[in-house]
Every structure is written in structure tokens, then in C-alpha cells.
Length: 135
Image (cartoon, rainbow, N blue to C red):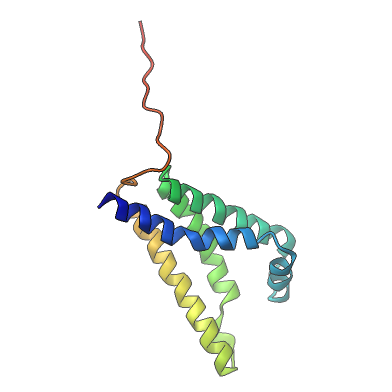
């Protein structure tokens, strides 16, 4: 059962690793700027850092709840800013934005589940368990 938790963390997080890396590309920054994102050259890489650190914490099992908080901070503004399906008139683009918006909403739900759940059953990184001896 513990391996299911590890597999779930990996499957949930892999998108954020891939996405986080892409947030350092000039194409992603230019696309965000074309969508009206202010200071895209700063905010897009910063959001990539949030995604990468959040995914890393979830995957390794080291402070996965904090990782999920970082994923929430990454996803919430991106979901609203980059996928406003309610403003799109073209039926095909409407459908694409609608799907991406609710895909992100479901991932926000997954992050909330991680925040509310028990610690990682199989952490990839183990915390130091040595205790100092006092005289």
C-alpha cells in the first residue's frame, strides 16, 4: 500500500516538473506575455521555481504538505490568468481552455488532498533521526 502512495506522488508531480522546466524557456515567457501577464520575464521563471520545488518536495516525501502549498501557489493564479474559457468565443479554443481550466482545478484538489493527508508513507529522502545526547 505504501508504494501506491509513492506512485501517486510521482504521477501527480511529474507534470509540475515538466511544466516547471518549461517556465525557463523564452517561448513560454513570450506566450505568457502575449496573454497579458505583466512582468512575464520575472513571474514565469518564478512560477517555474515554485512548481519545481513543490514537485520535488512531494516526490521525495520530504515536507510534501509544503510542496502541495507551493503547487497551490503555482496553479491558482495560472488557472485563472491563462485559461479564461469564459472570455473565448471560438468553440474549439473555448473547449481547449475549458478542459485546461478544469484540469488545473482537479490538480488543485489533488494538492488539497496532499495537504490534508498523513505524511508520505514512503519518503524518498529520510529525515535525520539522530538525537543529541545531553549530559
